[in-house]
Amino acid sequence: MHPIDWNQSLHIGVADIDAQHGALTDTINRLLLAYMHGQEKTLLASIINDLHDYAQQHFATEEALMRRFEDEYGELTLHLQQHTLFFSRVVDFLLEYVGNPQGELTPEVLDFLTDWWKNHVTGIDARFGKFLNQHGIQ
Ligand SMILES: [Fe+2]
Ligand SMILES: [Fe+2]
Image (tube, rainbow, N blue to C red; front, side, top):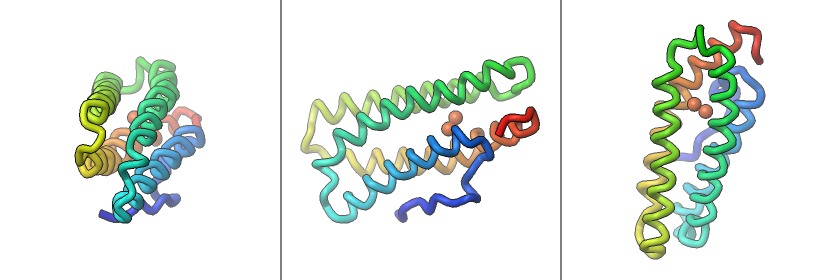
């Protein structure tokens, strides 16, 4: 597993969303580097909290734009479903952590986040970015 190299090729072309995706990348990389140095246990609780706050803010940004183009945006239902799944998974992590703070939860969190990157951010989010650009949003 390698840190995500946050660069232009990962941008979806909408400034607010890209800034938020950049912040998520930082969070993932922070957890990964701590894990590689065996120091993730002190960090994990605050990272999970960050992810929870992040999901609330970031999804609100994307979803407000989806609703604005509700009639034209063909992936609305699927996109909302994926956001709901992310959020409930983060809540599960939080509960799992609280139930067993010394457990080995970090690899699972990292797997989930890197999958999210590969499948959601560079998939449906990138397509949404193109769609928004076509509708004059940058
Ligand atoms: Fe996103
Ligand atoms: Fe999204």
